[in-house]
Amino acid sequence: MAAHNLISTITVGSGGSATIDFTNIPQTYTDLLVVSSLRTDAAVGYQTSRMKINGSTSNMTVKNMYGAGGGPGSATITTYLLVGYITGSSATANVFNSQNTYIPNYAGATYKSISSESTANNNSTTLYAMDISVGLWSQTAAITSLSLYPESGSWAQYSTASLYGIKNS
Amino acid sequence: MAATYDVISTQTLASTSATVTLSSISQLYTDLVLVTQSRASTTGTYDTDIGIRFNGDTSLVYSRTAMYGEGSNASSFRATGEGCIFGAVHPLSSGTANVWGIANYNIMNYSQANTYKTVLVRSSCNGASADDVRALVGLWRGTPAAITSLSLILASGGSFAIGSTFTLYGIKAA
Image (cartoon, rainbow over all chains, first blue to last red; front, side, top):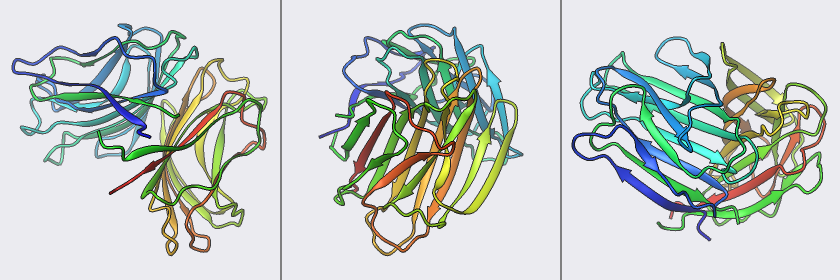
């Protein structure tokens, strides 16, 4: 029995895109997994990758743990849902991040926990970051849409994201 | 998509339980992934560790190296000679309602009978009074054997709450 099922995959075309949107998410799975390879066209080495749930950035709390070549750090974020770090246009050309976001029990009536891990590596001794984070969306509504957006700028061409539904039965 | 990622078993607790055991694990896969979403029924405001042990081995033959992020500081911790691999985390019963801890375990080459077993764990819970994000590597260095069962216990000695879910997936490399 296949546990992972592809719901949708999106690749950004020429000209970029401000968001990558998954809408009308089926409610027939147990968990969701978003696997991404992303880059922003903003003129930065790296920045944050963010997610809206059901169009909302409210009622979010994130705790993360990150490393950027020095001592590791941890932060609390309450103004947006952090799901990773991404490379920007100042990073080495053609370098995209790797990012996994796991959302268990997305169709249930409890608050939603969001677990993410990402790396925005670069062919350099600077401009790289890795991150593990946990987000909490303090809402009991079922998740019907997800939207990925960069801290600034737009998703660069060839950025991709795939949404999988995971069944535990 | 090729079916390389299969459900082996899943449990949702209908009553509290001090131990959750997944047994008679199929030996047909290459690697295992365990996904849990849980709370403790034990009274308390903060969070508590979840331990994992293999094949019922309670000997002091487990070790771990972990990184923790608590929202302002990150730290690392190492322990050896333990009776299980503690590290995953979830809220105690007085933690914020509706908040569940989640954990993802990767157990590679679990059916190999001649090697010690390594497990990678990412775990987190996030709430007003219980918050942590963790990554750790654990080692079981008991007598080498294929993993045929795994058990989860609580560091606090309490029980998993009703509704906690535990799903074991098998991954085939070929």
